[in-house]
Image (cartoon, rainbow, N blue to C red; front, side, top):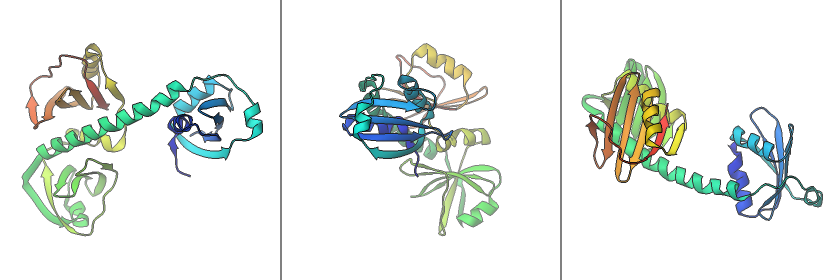
Amino acid sequence: MEERLLIVELAKALKNKKNQVFIFIGPDGTSIKCAVEDGNILYIEGLYGSGKSELERLMKWKKGKIIERPLKDEDRKKKGEYIDPKPIISILSKIEQKVDILKEFQREFIKLLLYFSNEIDVFQENLENMKKINKGKNLYYMKDIGFLFLNNNLVEGFVNNLGNFLKDFYSNQDIIFYRLSVNEEEYDILKLPIYKEPEIEGRVNLDFLSRLLKKLDGLFYISEKDTLRIIILKRKFTKIYRTSPEVSILEKLEIIKDPLVLVYT
């Protein structure tokens, strides 16, 4: 059974005014039962309680498995604590906005990776031979295919030319590999989006952003109107790139209003 975003599935059911019963199964194996009818939650109950407390637990779970059952008369008779459906439904618009932001980030991320391309180190090999001759952590550009994160003989991740992140890559063809000019610390940071969702996202107060830049190591994506910036941080080492309309290195970050940010650490 495929895992899904639990609160999102509930939000969809409420928005579409479905009549059904959900059994949400969390990562700890416990379940929460929720009945919805005509855009409202009739009841939500689980092992530890009912109502809003179980809704909060559902949100903390994030992903899980879902069993769906038809709504019966006995479910309609069972009324629980009233829960306003509007805040739950509003999650869908936030998800849509997040998808747009991530697509924008992916496009700019590809620009940054291309900026690192170094045509001095060029190899024409098939993937298996390339894995044998690769030493250490290296990032390679494969023309018309994408970018390969290679740690010795292990493929750690792949980004295609559309910016989609995948944890593996397979090919039997001979490919021209261009090694990118990144060090091991930059390699580790650039690999972050393959493995995790951004930890912080949305509009960020400038004071809060300043504290983050001093406190965290990682990859920051900052968008302010038509100006996009990607910051690579590692310990006391910092590089700031302007990625739109073209990639260039900035000496310092200048922001005049609260920007939109994604943070990978």
